[in-house]
Length: 465
View 1 (cartoon, helix red, strand yellow):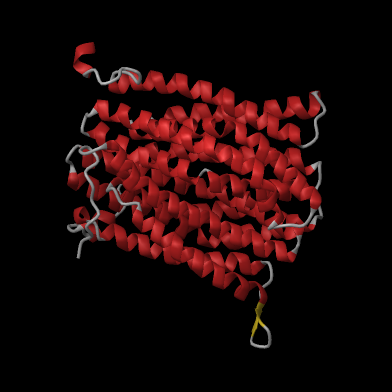
View 2 (tube, rainbow, N blue to C red):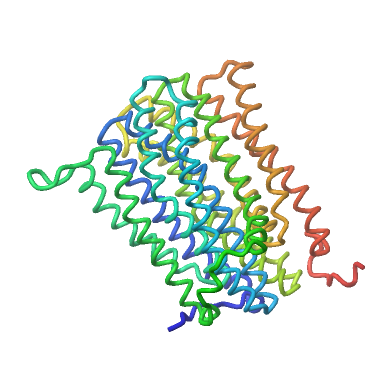
């Protein structure tokens, strides 16, 4: 029987739609982050080297997985636009083609990634180090889960376009508890009964749980009312639909890829300070991600709201949604600042007793607290551009902020001014703030072309023509 969660985001209060979409999305991401924290916790039981290897391997895995992020954004934008315009058969065909696209691309990435991933890890780690070997092994095992990750991202985009954020929340909640049980079982085994896999058990647990998430989300997509008439023929790969999806997915994927490569630039800069710097950074960003969850929920909800209303040509509601997101996001990020300053050390000490790891992680969190509002604005602009079907501009923002900006400013603080690892954090902050300035300029320009302007209040577009 078809599911009931199909929401018309072109009608009703904007704030209500944000609550409906953002809260479940944030909770889903909370359990996803908590899932990763569980991995870090058990890696910590194996040593600092295992934690550093886990951080490196997971970052390398994000290179092929960036395509999944792009696919999710493309599905949210394309299906949302079609639904907003009342083109339900088109929305149904796009959803089916999105699933097929995910399968094909995942198989290709598994092959290519087996060569690229280990090479990236080698580039940013010390030769002969234990954490390099752990990172390579973790990546190769985790790459077997690429189809699960990519299809889950794509299906979540389809579901969000229909106004459904609950399915991903439920999937990640169950995956978290499954991971809590599987991690100790697969890492340490049951003495005298089942032998443990050690470090490899961390990847094994993820394989099992993520394929479960994939299966559940595919089922939820097929249960949408709009998918009741879908047929197997709709899933047959079509070049024109694949091209349409790729055009919308590629910019977000490239943006994510640049972000990941930027993280490798950071790792490259940190490696000269020792594995404690790598481990401290890897743990600290988990707390940062946790505090950004409400923001990510808000900015993620902005995409389907913009997509449906842009498809329906309700331009005033697009502007209203953007400003609502910014106002609430600003409150959330400002409330996060004292949490980072007061409880950062306590959080870090829960995962390591290495004083140097804690020192590095705490410095990162305190510098990071200053730029949280800028992150929020950048995330929301990405969603706005995707919803307006102009995601290509996000690439230029990302190339400046996460490629040139991070590399340049980190170099200035480390090589020119001679800072320790804290110079890396200052460099990241400078790149984020200047990148925000560029993003605001480009968002205003695109909004002017697509919806008659971003700052026009509620004046009808026709009066400006």
